[in-house]
Amino acid sequence: MTSYWCEYAWLGGERAERAVHIDVEGGRISVVAAGVAATTGATVLSGLTLPALANSHSHAFQRALRGRAQDADRGSFWTWRERMYAVAQELDDQRLEALARATFAEMALAGIALVGEFDYLHRSEVMMRAAASAGIRMTLIDACYLEGGLPRFRDADARAWAERVTAIEPGPEVRMGAAIHSVRAVDPDSAAVVASVARERSWPLHAHVSEQPAENEECWQRYGLTPLQVLDRAGALSPRFTAVHATHFTPEDSALLAGTEGFCCLCPTTERDLADGIGAVHGRLTLGSDSQSVIDLFEEARAVELDLRLGTLVRGSHAAGELARGASENGYASLGWPEGGRIAPGALADLVTVGLDSVRLAGTRGEEALAAVIFAGSAADVTTLHVGGRAVVRDGRHVDLDVAGELRAALA
Image (tube, rainbow, N blue to C red):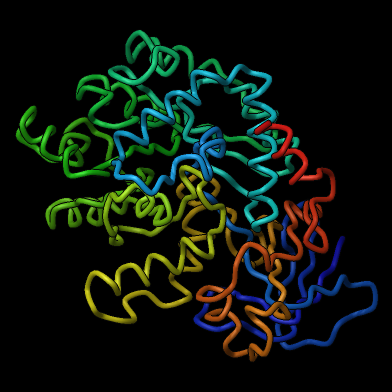
């Protein structure tokens, strides 16, 4: 058994609790007690301890585009996509593994213990090894991609996708998921095949949905339906479904997703980087780093609220606790790990501690700690990350990897 004593810990309410004792056995939390003195032998976690974060939508290879695709000249999602294609074409397995390992390790430094890798490069073994080397859990969300894109993205048809993906053997800290890349890339009949495979295996099912107005317009012209309505008719929607982006949902789309108890994964940094628009929460909120222009789920969480304020001129639509839940418990659930994302007996012992002594957070009072971290903290404030009770980050450093060095080498 391992014991921790947290100066402050968030246990799921709207405020952090003071002086929280946590026992861990077999990689799971066995005891949680608030308002108790530190015991001899307990590891002291100074600052605010939260459930570790879940990055619900990641394309790890796109880390190579950071700083190289934010040009000052005019452009669009579509011009950015051409640069992304060029990167994807250059990456062989060796370079992809090095880049993914370094990117996943950067996520660990940001307090992320679980990543949902939305994979359309279809290099499952490479991605699983990379996550294992970085010390984090993964849901490998293998994407069916049939039309457009690059040849390496595409399967011959949905049946070929199903045969390939069901033959993947996940590693010990990996679970499987399925994805319909988008209604642009997968026709309704093929989407139904993907949805059926996910349903039969109780896998999470994710899809890019209504990211740009052009996607909605094209879908309406082709099918007389919105993208989400096409996916609904294909049998994709359920409590295991995650609509990624959902930036241009109609009111009917919003009601449809909420009515099926699905998840909505917002990636505000990517959405504003690509000038997609300001997303709103539909269904249960989750968060993702997507294109890796920034890996910081605290930034993504507060952007959900702050970007919405710009669009609506209204403050306070989403409280700190709701945003924290989107970055943790909801994210774990959307990725098929419902036993994670909480500090409670029986939950996975995945914990992140954020120091409160940086210039961003110095002077924070205990009753303000959660709101301060969500609205002012950053990935740079993460001091420790435990995954299954095992330290992956300690004193702000990865215990196994020189992450900056790995990134420099991978991107050279």
